Length: 517
Ligand code: GAP
Image (cartoon, rainbow, N blue to C red):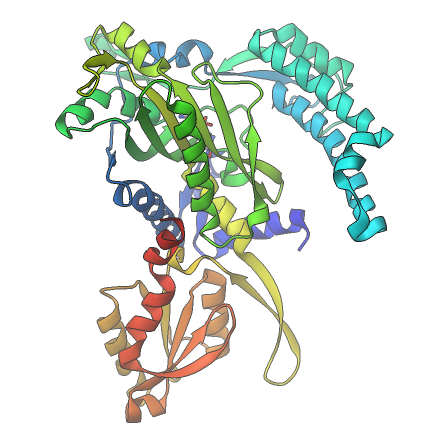
């Protein structure tokens, strides 16, 4: 499927099959806010469990917490969010469209990179195994010219962002002759900074309401509870605190479905370490996180690391794990070495000591932090986009047909098995219910008796159900059923008593975790 088509189909499929709905749809929707439907919420819960277990269950030295969305406003002064959590925005005067200025420039840089990738692909095609990609990249004049352009623009952008030089950002847009992707116009406003935090009021105006923020990341809830957890859990360095929760950002450009939302969920883990050991742990967590992604069985080439050229105000090293979404490689997760910035800031702003006493050395110090931060909704989108497929299949009468299938990793699939009586009579529905009543304690099951068996299989394929179990007249005689595998469409006759084990072998979360630990 072409990538553009895939994305459109994915959005339509997510709605048609109860995964994702536009928020407030009957009121024409709310931009960049989405609701999860009956299957979406199951997939989301399964992703959360996979992440939570990989952090909290599999590591003795990581514990979880759940902190409030509303926090003391001073926290956001300490963390730097009130002054620095900004995006540079620019408007096109003709189209009236608003963009992130840095995104426009990065998109322009990507065009040069695409040219290089195309030349490399041509070389592979022409020379096959004898093609020396490294030498080609180092010597080909076209590649060198394009690479020099990338380095020049990238260098200017990083410098401008670091210096908060909005005039220079606009100048790069002018010098690169970047046009509005919608209208083609180059009639731009100046670049302005835009703070991404949502504000609200705590208390009524009569009481003297105070301004507070909806948290833009869950991490600060962890930092301000660092000492509570360390003391009450008697935690020794190195140790981690994990949290899953909502975050809110008033994104300037909120397109691309659930990739960039104004209300979303993060799964973050702050790992507190001895100063001086942070780079070791940074490498460790890079490795562990990419393993977590790859264990799902999604093709490995869809993931890659991207090193940050411009570091956030709190970091001394940062990598993204990028995923190849239908609209290209984009950030899925961030792994940041945050130094002691946050704890020191909270120490200063709150006036409370946030130190660790090391019983071995007898010293007290502020720990360093390595953070892993992943968007739950983006993970959801990455799974859907890698798993939605169309396959040519042969019907029983020999005609060809297409089946739409969501090949979600079985451990994460919303419905684990569907139980389908072949006909709606002769005691088959009752037998099907009996089987569900036995299996429902372990798996989310679905009963379906409507339409032909073929159509019911197709419906379950589209939802992503790993197994369909069909009850027929033979079942009443010998307690056997057919079990159909979603991916291979193979059917096997098995004893009802074997079902729990067969399904569990395929769908257990343990299988995924065992690939990592
Ligand atoms: N505590 C660090 C932090 O928040 P971030 O890179 O701003 O770092 C972490 O965000 C992750 O949260 C991203 O990698 C992305 O997956 C997710 N995320 C960020 N903004 C988002 C948005 N507007 N919509 C959906 N997910 C988002």
